[in-house]
Length: 365
Ligand code: PYR
Image (cartoon, rainbow, N blue to C red; front, top):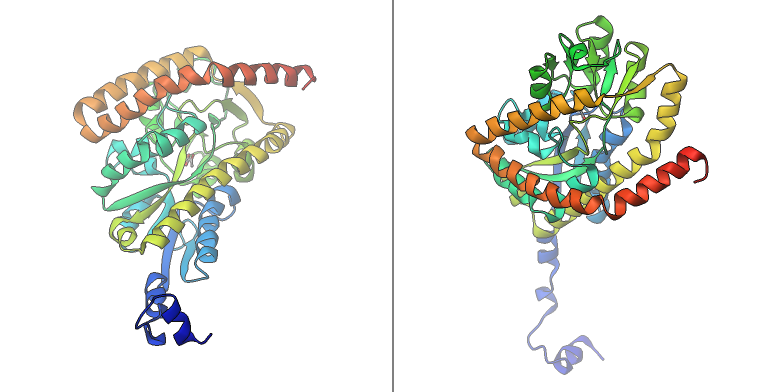
């Protein structure tokens, strides 16, 4: 059967070869090249690696038509100014933490983590299925930004201190690198908080510009070498139960993408989000062993410290909610979600995990 007979038999009249869909294919898959600035150095391969993970997924899914060039912290944009560069459309995309931008508006904190907020699993659930990321994007649109979760570190460690922190008084007078809203809560108990990009923390600690620091957890903290200067390693980071790293997009640039590219990018971020947490979970135990072998002194924060900071956090949230509409909207949404999340988590998950942890300690796992 020749082509003419085929079209006739199929009931498709008047279709010539010239009317086939080649121009539409070209239009649906245009060549797009974007630049992404990360807030993280290449040496931190898990947190930085999520950006290259997204770029590779997008490139492969579009046969190289949509390319994202990834730049490490400071290569084209200062690490804590990534959001500003995306808003200004200097770059199309960033990989950063919302809470680095609380100086613009404290509501940014809810995009990453707030003290005594959600754990990683709950954070993912709130963003993905609890309306959290839609609400965040309504807020971010006021800064010409759109964001997708693109990494989670899991619960973090509470940082490195030169001396033991036994009571709340031991925190008083410390200059500490700490990210996000936790700085405000720490300030209420006498700490002088400083927000410093990950790559710049070690020199500040070594020189004595700061007395203490937190960053992420064993895998990154080992690479950054904090234990050599400040050996007391506290847990947990009550300010980061499961912080999200977001992919930021210039809102107009994201909206201008063809629908298939938007979907590919969205799925690439979701995959990178899951893979980052998996990679941290697979790497932290070995790093913790190495840190302890290298002299790190593991300590738990006392309940006096946790309770005092919990109270201070509640006061801060009441103050911010009274004066900042976006903070209130995001906080109320997360708070309502948290009530049910912890109700459910303590039934099956917590009992299962507790039993397993007892077995692990007994050597019978
Ligand atoms: C921090 O900058 O502290 C992170 O947790 C990424």
